[in-house]
Image 1 (tube, rainbow, N blue to C red):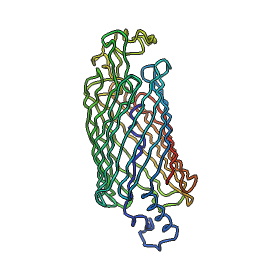
Image 2 (tube, rainbow, N blue to C red; image 1 turned 90 degrees about the vertical axis):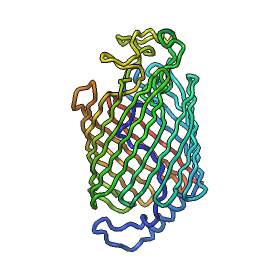
Image 3 (cartoon, helix red, strand yellow; image 1 turned 135 degrees about the vertical axis):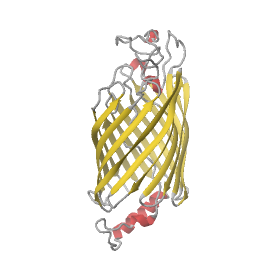
Image 4 (cartoon, one colour; image 1 turned 30 degrees about the horizontal axis):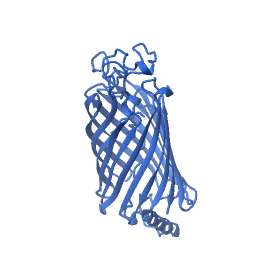
Length: 396
């Protein structure tokens, strides 16, 4: 799976001050009487925040690319969310992922188990911590982790910092790794690249309808027979809320935004030398001869080093985004975000088109069962990818 720079990221949301549920009219800020509908919704929110739940997880991903780069997958599993109180929740997540390159001869699997906790240290300070491990069919393990801290300085200003360790799922090489039979890496694992990242950012509303946001950070990527590769990233923009209304209306938010994003790596590790599934001329290599590609694994002016992940020296995107969300009294809600703009990166022509769409809906089946579904597509970097995520959540 390619690195999704523009797609929505799923996050656990903590219960904020209950007083925020008693909204004011968005036009003029006049106080209005609290309706029975709002009281019922507030009761439901409090009930949801203190209720243990279980989720069934399903994901499907597909993308463009050649035998080395394309990596489709199907993921399934479950999560238990145990909530002993309104301020703390514990999660246990188990998933199985089946990876499908173009040739099924190279199919791989990964089984992950992750433990997590999210808590509020104070009314304005929240934290989310995770730690887990993945066992791959290449007889190897990887360790993943996450630590996010969020400070809500006010209803308008939010600051966060995140440290994470994740698998770089750009290709079969970077995800599960490959064991060449011959060549410079004969009998050794190549790939299974892990990313260590730290970012900090925030957002604030500067006027009634305008907001600004930004994020910056750095990290490195390294794997088996893939040396460490330092990267830096920074981005931000400004948004304008065209429509902002109280909940349970067909359209509660319509927002336009401009975003500028940049990242860059020290080395170009978008190569497969010594572990390529294709020859120099692009012909498939038999599994028993992996390693005879005769491509240098070291980065150079004439070619990328082994790593199997998109890593230009410089990447810049300028995009315009439009997002909308809304809901209804029966609990059905949606959020749609689309962007269009330009992207340019080292080794490409300037002014390439950048576009993407993300759509999420939460479908209530019964009072205790719901089904959130998310779909997105984008053309980040040299490839186009799309994903479908679905869960079935049951509250106890």
